[in-house]
Image 1: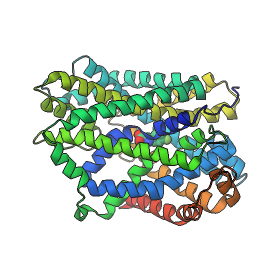
Image 2: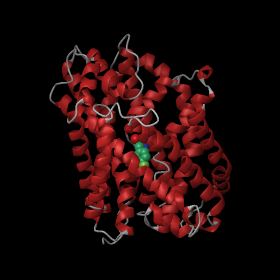
Image 3: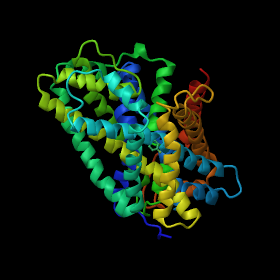
Length: 450
Ligand code: PFF
């Protein structure tokens, strides 16, 4: 079995954890939510949710992971032997496994769109709705893309914590941030810029309803990769001198900046083209945007080409750094529980996730008629993972840290055994005990029953 390694540098810690957080949720889901929930007011509420709900849960996961230096399942077993709390460890790893099985499907689509963009097939006027539906319903193309994407994830994980995850994140995250800057410059040269800035910066609070608040909270939760064992697993590779509060702050800030900037990239393009409505879900990035890019740049096709290629590259990189963390959450468990070599443990995860991934991929084609409770495999996985198990996990983590865990453990981890000061400790405990569980319970009830 591999010797357990830590991340080798502070930069590696932040880049790996930010890589997990920054994903399709930022570039694809966040702009869609902003579009559906009224713009600037949603963004403000989102920021509050990140600060009051997201950050405390992230810090809680860091405390659990770093204190135990173990995979998520063993971490809860160590901290709460023989108690029901242990179920959260299993829940975290199980949800990561489920999410990975369908995350690779969408990630595979981004790979396909990147290849199409590179091959000049995403330019010129064409029916992009048909392009998309023909692709996703094809029996083999999306499958092949998902397999290739899974292979890419596997190769990074198999190389280990330092030479795989850390090295890869330290290269990919700066690249991703660079692409965002280039796309922003292109986007700000479009005619729809001022209209989109008003939409994104001038809050109209009359649009705020309880549903908007709950959507912002759900989005913050997904975007920060909480409750899936990923951040807990990564924190188990943090060294004794890692400042947990600073790391959580850095990760949340990077994640939020990428999400907001993605809005600034997408909306000027959307507002530049009359009559195009931002679609919900996959339609936004795979149908609306190719249409918008084509119309917005038809006078300057070279810029259109570069913009489109960079945009899908951004999506692919974002998806990859997130899928790596999901994969590691499960691999770390197999590796430590069954004393397997890393290559074999990660191979097992890749193959079994891919097997479930086949069902999810074909849900858009030959298996679209096979449903359970009216949901296709893809929708069922998404529903169970992100609407049921994830919020439940969030509640359990905050209660675990707020009520069960010895207060000295929490304080020692947060202050690195007293060598750092953290004046907001009382506020932190208050948030984890009262604010976070109530807030997440509200999302849960809203998503499931209202
Ligand atoms: N946070 C990622 C995103 O915004 O796309 C998605 C994700 C990754 C969720 C890893 C959960 C996770 F454990």
